[in-house]
Picture 1 (tube, rainbow, N blue to C red):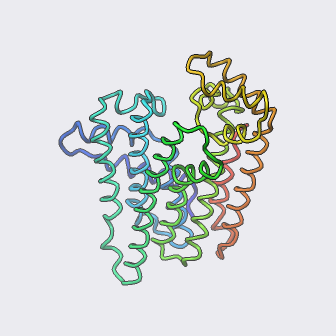
Picture 2: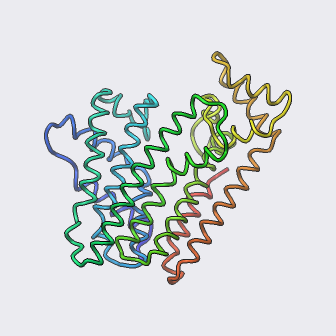
Picture 3: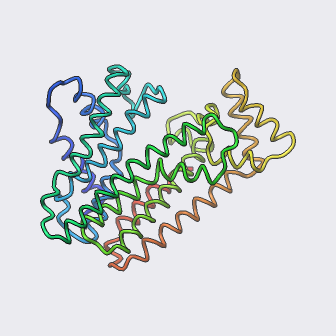
Length: 332
């Protein structure tokens, strides 16, 4: 079995050695640029990990794994444009380094290249059984890419609403955040021709870990360690982001606390630091941090239960256990 670091190195080497040198350069340079900014490569590594549970030749599906990473970075490129973000991973975003039209067109090309890259080794699946496995994996990939767009639309819709429910929020983050993690694991298993039950258990593991990760992000944006994360806390509060914390606070607060919270949400002119302090105090009073942490722990246990139900040697699942621990046991 490969380690997380070994698989990460494989993905990075593949990307470094397969840069797009086609013309016109202004179309492809932004693609190479955003892919070169790095990141943890979580999604392609998960695909390779799932495949490696059943087969050793992970190099055979590197193009599929990098296809998912290409799609993920396409979503980041367009997210940055929609959010008007200036920086991505410590570097200027594509629309800042070039311009908005370039970001749109290069993003469109990335989406197409992701599908092209995923289909690149279709002919290697010669038998009918393997062709069926490939088609199932391809459908999982397509469904996930559409689902992420649906999640993004929900997130945009929520910006204009003050009545977002917990159920709606959980579905939005499932689509926008956890779906690609779940799909990466399922695709890896499908390409390895694993039992369908195992593929579904891996999907559930990834989905629950992804949900827990996003809820943890909500908590850390308010209650995290500024030294550890090297960023100011409270950005979600300032932007009125419909996070789990805000939704639960609106649901649980009463009287003066509720009126105060609604007042801060409706204000157009305010001191950011004052708003962060006031809203955080309300969060503390209604115990939303503790509620979120309980949900995170429950989702984590659901994920581990799914992983434990897969009938293969425990030593083979060690890297996935390690992944879950590293993703969720961050400094609080």
